[in-house]
Image (cartoon, rainbow, N blue to C red; front, side, top):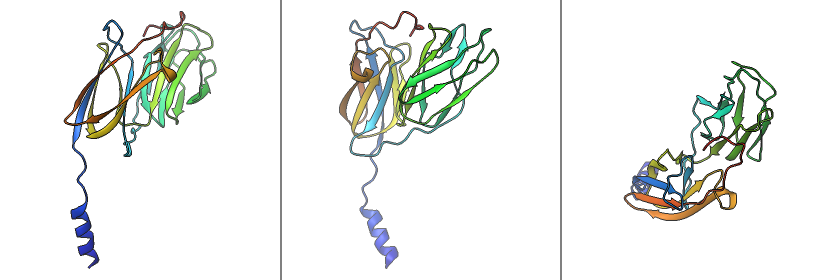
Length: 206
């Protein structure tokens, strides 16, 4: 009898919504593409699948710059900071999502930090002011950064109400982020027009 009841309950359960793809274009006021903008999708009224931690995340120190300028990682990712320069570096961050400091270390040495809280993390070097970069730690499986053409595509998003957010370290908006809610049908092509502040004079190119 219990098995029959379970079978009836399963038959009555609603099937999961179909998965679709979402394409997002991020542009400036004059239509210029905005690279290194982080696009995140979260489901509304439903649990958003978490981002899964992988391996091989790294921010290199090379030519007295951080590379890449922006790295997107999932919560609990371990990120290495190898030094390929002839000089020593001292990497740090005062960001709420992750505060840390890696004491001076030399060429071909490496340090690793675990990023266990979602949010943007600004990186700097205590020795070289021109070194600036960002790590965006995400708790959503649907997160990626725009390419050089200002575009990003996210696959496997369940249909229904979602919120799409765009973050950039120099975006003129509260928290450097803008968001909108849409209802996904068979897929979506969304465009965001954003205004960026001028980066600090000492920062690397974005």
